[in-house]
Image (cartoon, rainbow, N blue to C red; front, side):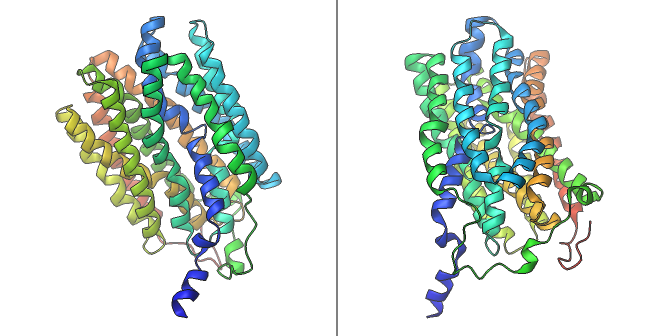
Length: 411
């Protein structure tokens, strides 16, 4: 009887289809698909049109730059209209946006417009949409549920780059973009339509309490130091992650490693993301989350130093695993920490503004690291910068302090 009682009180087993739909939504989102596939397009596109790598990778700045503007708005729309309708429009819009680069005529501004359209039309697919469902429907196992949903970023890195690399090899980069355009509409949209219904809980759900609906307003959150500490910590992590991962494939291919082997290294990264998300999600439900975050974010410092010392395939594989495990921490930890320190009541709005900082870092970093390469003709400076950014993030996350008293939340 006790075993069955524990099983029926398990939030994960009662709402698996919601988690699956949200996870697939993350895989096909505007923050994940462009980010994990851009490295595959760098060489063929720049060779065809004669652009520099930094010029091409500046496309992500337009994508995430638009995300800086749209993410607070998406938070407000979710707060008013719900996550499901926002997600459905976002997935359809992202598919439409991926068609644009496939038909470009060689003008750089067309690629910038295409990636800006991915962020604008696909704005409803950013993490706040999927994590709002988790913070609404999960209470006792919120950390693990966030880990399961956001493991979609790792699954994308495992599954999509090798498949797109094969398409590019056999059919060219334009067909690669057409293939990406199919994923949100054909794969994710039906699952989200039928199964992504946040707010629908079962009668067996006795985990929630009145305290689960507390929360600071956006104004109260930004007036306290914890909001800015969390924002700065996430910004530094994403400067490092977003600079290193898209440049990993061109860095390896420059040494003579095939694009297929380089893409498999990113798949290792994705596998580690999945493991990291599940382990971190399990741990933050039981231990002090900033301490868990500090340990996880410390690992890629070693990976950056390995790449800095010798850029071999073996070192890249080790670094990819360490980077991936840390990547399994930052996105779900931002969601978990935002809900824990600021409360779930105004979560979507607060997370939307935190995500704006994340998006700005994701947009700046790829072109920054590519520019460092073109200045020095080496990625070593970028690897050193990554190690420094991760170190700064570790220090900052530990400053969050104790969890707030839910009865009288502290800023």
